Length: 394
Image (cartoon, rainbow, N blue to C red; front, side, top):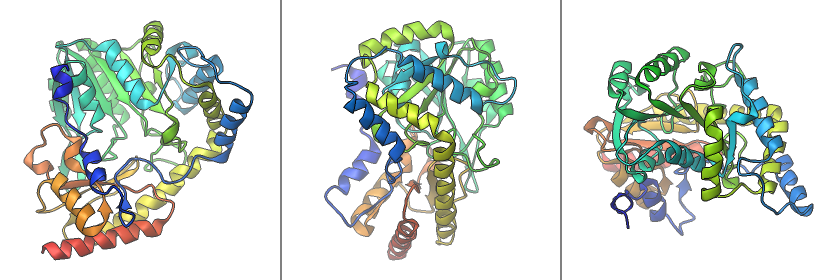
């Protein structure tokens, strides 16, 4: 086995989940998905495709009609003056994870320097290590519960020797987002250094701070068509399709043929019936996604005030995403705390340590709570269990 694989760290989120296996009494908020099923119009499109016998291979890059629909959908989210998005810049992938890994395979050689902004979903630091890259992280910093980017620190880390800069916003786990001015500053710097930018924007539509229906700022809003920019998106979050495993890449058109070759060697293609479901999702996006976002905002606005009222908890509302990322003052190692909460309180949360590569001392004690729950009473019940557990620790 390659040393890079042997040395990969086991998922801390899975470690916590494993501690609660077989226990029906645990309130589970550790994974990043809603407990709401995929809308029926999407499921019915997949069923009709299967009934029609669409069980064969498709194009490596995805059904032509889906690629065109994705280009049209994505262009509709952009402000006036954004670079044109055509289907020759789109590749359909077997989920956002596959999109990210294919982008890594396309861009990163062993020994390349890769900079990742943390805290972040652990796959984004593990994937460069799988490729044998030299990983360098720059961290957002908490200030009274909010997260702040030190732009000077980030730009100093991205040098002409940096092959790839990996960014995720709205961010998992913090919900933090870039401003358009920050995105422009980063792109300008990376053009000078010749660095590729890989932007994980799977939470783009799950944005609460703008006008209704407004998406979070995207690097596609401020980029040129042939910038060294690859953007990853997914049907998982904003269409309630986590188990369907379908995502897409947006990239320079000159890169698309090479990605098509890589997809052949990874997954060959995405199943046709799932792509038909995706077409239905896009056709009904004006109804589906705003309802999803409105419900998630209710979830956030229900959970966060309850957490803020708990002594020893530091939290502020996240501007986007699915999560409340909060600090338990004085509780120490978050992995140990998360395991104890499962065993002693029946509460399943993700440990904050999972989202850092070698977290600094001030990053200890953070936990991630996925608030995407159909039943808001589950959230209040979970807070009650947390508060009771904290009393036993006093």
